[in-house]
Amino acid sequence: MEKLKILLGSFLPFPYNLGFHSARFYKFILRTQYWSREELEAFQIKRLQEILAHATRNVPYYRKLFRSLNLTPDDFKSIRDLENIPILTKEDVKRLGSELYAENRDRFSPSFFQTGGSTGTPLEFLIDKHMKRVSSAFVWRFRKNFASFTPKDRLLVIRYRDLSHIKTSPPYEIVKNTLYISAFHLKKENLKPYLEIIRDFKPKASFVFPSAMYVFARYMEKHGMIGYAPVPIITTSSETLYRPHRELIEKAFNGRIFDWYGSNEDVISAGECECGNMHINAEYGIVEIVDKDGRRLKEGEKGIVVGTCLWRMAMPFIRYKIGDYASFSWERCRCGRTLPLLKELEGRLEDIIVTKDHRLVGRLDEAFHYSPGIARMQIVQDVPGKIRVKVVKDDDFSDRDIETLSRELRARLGEDMELEYEFVQDIPLTERGKFRAVVSNLKIEEFL
Image (cartoon, rainbow, N blue to C red; front, side, top):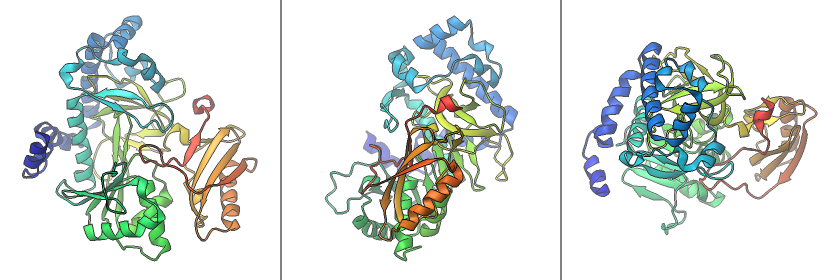
């Protein structure tokens, strides 16, 4: 049946090849991205009340919670009223387990999902069928309306993919109009053959981990291959995109990057428009920026990202702490879309370094930019005021690279920051093929 759907979909025009429900919702959200703030917030409140009514009737945890707080769905007249509900953390989800499952979940045809566990134990949760259709519509609004490509275009995908069944060396797979390369196979000896495959495939767009594209971009720069394998549209996601990496990737592939932001738990999402701003999909979920105590911050203030998905029925996530650090704004964008903006995004709290005087410093990508002899590095922090830097040397590495890096790091972290270097052959990816530039073993919330 699934193969028949794919075959029939290949003959249908976009967006109907996404399926009837996704296509209908896609056409709806093409209009809503230009709604006024008042219209968007009214839509959010309506959906929120429906989710809360469902949760209080059918989800054991929320039924008990609302009873203890003496709250009903009708008490929520504005987004600010969400503050009456406590934050839901990853630890809460693990502890509560099936208490978060809707008792009528089977009617939503849920599927079981698991996060990669790159920052600890994997998280297990349910996602219902209609929610996946809604999510697909938002992804394609981003791809087609923001980045300007369609399912008919040739696509390069460099992410996690099991290619153990492929006998070619290096392994890759072409399915219909998509070229798949696994982020796990980007060894030095594979890079040129892969670039030849990409060049011959001639993709119009890509869906990639930024760290994987950066590996290629560094190789192309070093070997005089800038522009060798053009990829006009580069969509990145799942990792923090550092500015120097963006610049080199766009230069090497002669393309334009459009970054996509989403949570592993599929609670909220946002996409970068042609003007370079990250628009929150307000029709998909409610984004709040809060302090360490869960209090909502003012527009423009930086804090912890919390999300409420407006479409989760089998396992509702209400005020779920994403763990990223950013600010929120209703500032109007030149692109004309009225969707709110996610700004000053610094990745997960685990990506932030704590200095000796307990300053919080994120986005250290500029410090890495001036040491070309370093192929890859990772910062590990166990105590405030001290970091261990794992370094993979490139062929042209010299002591000057470490001297420069130390100077740049101290300029940002303070002269009293203790630096310890560890030279390694490789820095392993997570089990999902992602690269972690910073590994913090601190509880960052304690320093907020």
